[in-house]
Length: 385
Image (tube, rainbow, N blue to C red; front, side, top):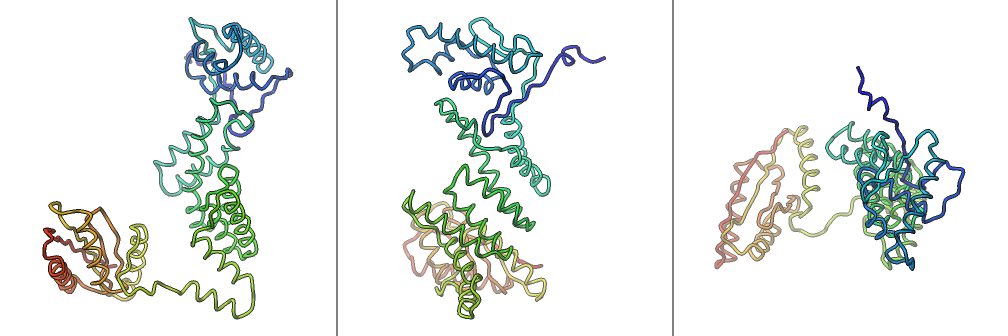
């Protein structure tokens, strides 16, 4: 037997992302709509009269805000009757506060969007990709476009941040799937919320280049560069500039530009020291090395080196970094793990020979910095296919 309360429950859905639309024959004023939107956004709780007066009449010249509130509630109830004639008394007056009819279940697109974004953070792979795509479909624009009330600023920023974070998580997945048109669409929509986010320009340019449309990539670059120069007084980063150079080279057909492309992708750091990089880049380098080892049958070695706790972290870490830079080969990547520890890869070196390298580094450190109390510790792991 079904619960009678469940049978009596009806669904009302409001779309809050983008422009708020309502099907009513009566035209509502700007403040009336903002008041209704505030009630909808807070439908899950009862709202006191003091809170409503503080939000909507704190800075007004009204000599009787309590009366202004009563008049507003009268307008809202008439508006709701016009919008939902099948429901009576949707907005209830309780003791000192107001709340929605508990028998009516209200659903907001903002709540569905938030759940989808948060669920995506707990998932991986295809499930995460599917949830992020659902989030994109739900986000029709920033919260309550056209509502310039102060109360709307904070929730608008919250949902905008959720959306932009979802975009950043989705784009690398789409790039892996080679969904170039979808990438371009996501970036174009994201520009409406943040036109200065360089990450979206880079993804959009890469998508156009992958599709064989370098002209479009150049056009996107020029629009973005003009915007941030004018509004922020800054230029695009080297990453975007390199994409622009690549797109320009692909756009032209003469051999000189083709040579420029080869020069761009093959030029490297002429520094003869070890290659210091981010931990994320280090992971990518190790992944590529494992593929190489699978073909060559060789072995490389991973090493974690730490300076210990009884040291001057900043000073000794800087000293250790210098020893690693000058004592390793140019092709050996190094990444920082913590303030006093690093991970490095000795390419083409087995653990036995890695031990020789480590002993040399340890000796060089203590010979160079005789007064340092740092005790270097090393942990070794063979990297094989």
